[in-house]
Image (cartoon, rainbow, N blue to C red; front, side, top):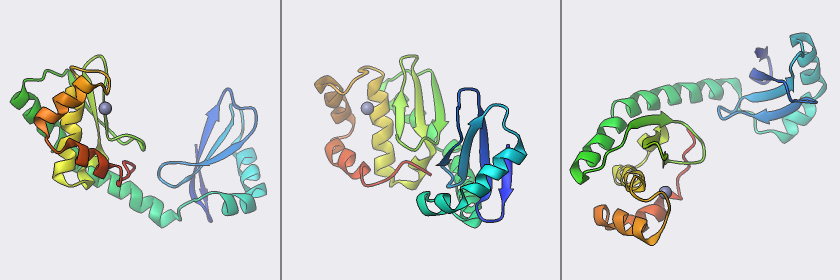
Length: 181
Ligand SMILES: [Zn+2]
């Protein structure tokens, strides 16, 4: 459920069967999120929100409602760009170097640029669209190499190095950016 609040904007309320008490956190969009026990009513949730207003304001980096909406918009734009680009770029490099993957999934996780699962699904973060092309390509080549090596062993890096001679510098540079949208 979503509570519209004058101060915090849209507050995301998640009913959780396992929750004992009420917990406040910040969602990836910068919205205030509340985890509440399963049968908590909207009335009760609002009451808790009001009772904790001061501590939320002081402790949690809630974005103001207009930047919450700006973030939604930015994410939508990135997703559109990503959809029109990343699957094709992945396919291009896979064909070029003879890799076979099963599926390409687009994600917007906050912690990683990409991943490769044992069922040969490659996930790419839509935040890649904010990176310079050379780093974007490096992430794609990195995930493709994981199709043959599901670890970061010497053999894995040797394979990455065959397709991207500057992979060490690219890996380092990548750390300067945040995958979160
Ligand atoms: Zn890796």
